[in-house]
Length: 369
Image 1 (cartoon, rainbow, N blue to C red):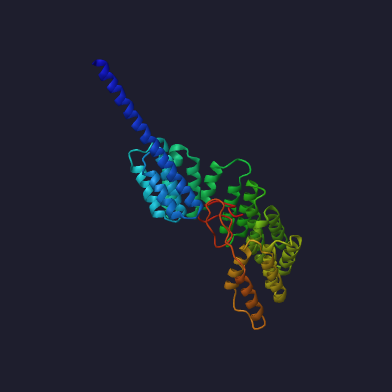
Image 2: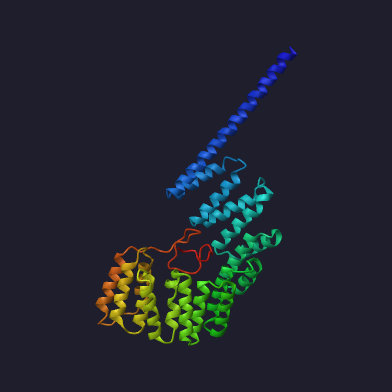
């Protein structure tokens, strides 16, 4: 009889274990299917379906649910649903089941939600606590980005000096270039000194070279300004769409036009350089030649970014004179008929209204292809 009961107990235990294993496998299978559905929806460009699928995966309650919630929060943030991202990450922190080893990761995600939402003080406080408590480098970088957005460039520079590499720091060069532009209206000499500090941090920084060009132009040094602008374009040809402030500030308009003409001739397929040349010609009052250069810029634009920049330029331009009205109209129509394409950040995937040294959404430098 005892053996019979033992056999029954063993059989019952085996059945229970089998049921539990089957349930666990089923949950894992359901979770995997939900993950796949979410990924498929992202690839197909259906964020609502992706959010629903990832939410289903998170509700399954497995140990991997934290990763699912983090993926869901990142998707909320990417879609601009920042309130839901904040709420999700806060709920994760308040939940009892969160592994203490993952807490800092969730707090960092919440800080990024705050930054994207414009809650800069809250983001700075959370990033600073993580950086000081855990020595979290990613949090320190987040704090640096918040300082930039708060307008505290000096604080961002000081922090980057502490966490960045000792030699060849492109981020520090970008920050010093931004600080140089901030100083430019009132103190061109200080702006030039800051730009040179940026070049000391990273000698091949196109941003720092262009900031130096802007400072030299403001100081009236035509040759030095054009030399620095040329160095910037040599280091990164993409800087052509960002070169106009420096070229426009050069006191000798004819020298600036000759510089732009030489650059466009050296790279005849670069639409941005033809746009730069057209603007320089227009500044010299050579309108027919300017229109021809701008038309060439549109023809050579393979991506659509220059066409978009041209539309904005024509929109902001003052009313044309009677002799220029027809040419301006034809140019505007040509720009509107071409496919425009905004620059897209390679890090966060967001479109920008125009090219910049830094993505305003995620804070990445040199983010546009």
